[in-house]
Image 1 (cartoon, rainbow, N blue to C red):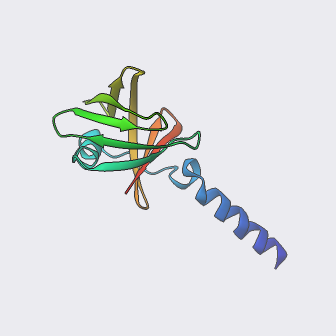
Image 2 (cartoon, rainbow, N blue to C red):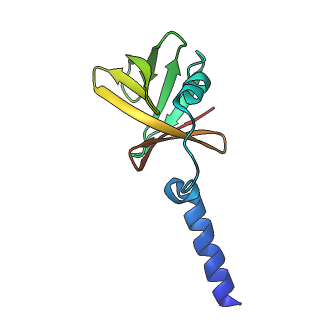
Image 3 (cartoon, rainbow, N blue to C red):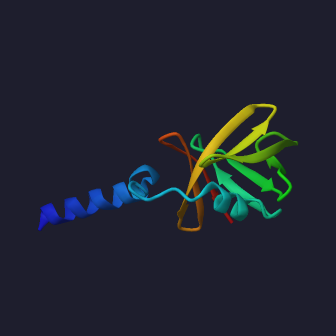
Length: 118
């Protein structure tokens, strides 16, 4: 009985980790992710370092990111291959996405990145 409880606890811990919970799950087509995210309404984006950003992307390829700084940063976005790339003064980041409960989890290579939710 104790072994079953330990296994259940390990399963819960692994399932709560985005890297394990989505392993084997296919990425969304970049066009679909872009259509979902670029609707002009703000998304909350939790960064791996614990910061929360407010990201607004528009259908025309523009957008803004608000974070810990008291001003918004302008960004542009494009679809390149299987990724959606966000570009701004801080550089360019190309992300792939998987659907998760409450939103989208982005991936930078094989590492989870921003988790978008509303």
